[in-house]
Length: 260
Image (tube, rainbow, N blue to C red; front, top):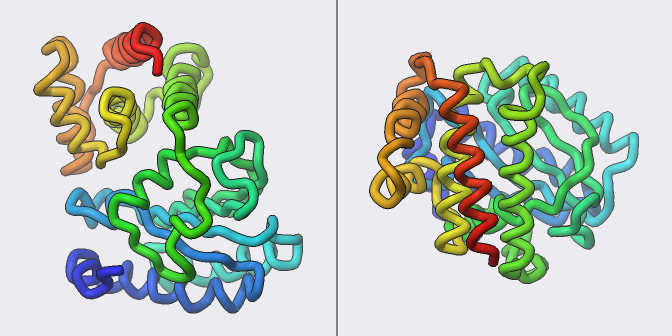
């Protein structure tokens, strides 16, 4: 891992948090820990200290028992009190022998809360990690990660689109659909789904959005540019829900008519 170049790009407290993760989790999880793997903007030039989260995957030999789970929760709460970057951690906990498997064991630390929630076997985060291969602890992911086939990726992209469709189109009571951050996230995520469907690989959301601006109909340009502006500045903007819903349905149709 290019730790020096990484640390030069991120605030000192965020770098300190990553260092603490790499030393504390091996102690808390002991022999159960396989490795800690970074992905997302923290590994590339799209990282924005004002807006970006710190995304990582923690792989264990088995699902942490209640004692380890409580220790993790207690440590995360203590770390949050000492380092404000902790709330911007997005940690996905996965079990080594269940990777890429739908309905597998798993937990998530997000928005300052650690919870057991299972996993849908999402290969997208692994493809993202493999672009830079930044490892905080443990062996290279390639040494144990199953092959990510075209079928596995296609199914994951359809699931991702389905989650957005549910929140934005099918669930009027959704707590997210009127949140400016979520609307921008949804637009950029649809862009990456479309890019990945076409290219069979993963890039950052901003890179995918810029590709969409050049290669797809102009009618989506306004909401995509609004989402990019929000992602960069954090300044709230009124991204039309109706237009986002149409964008999701457009992506649905495009994926359905070009089955992989």
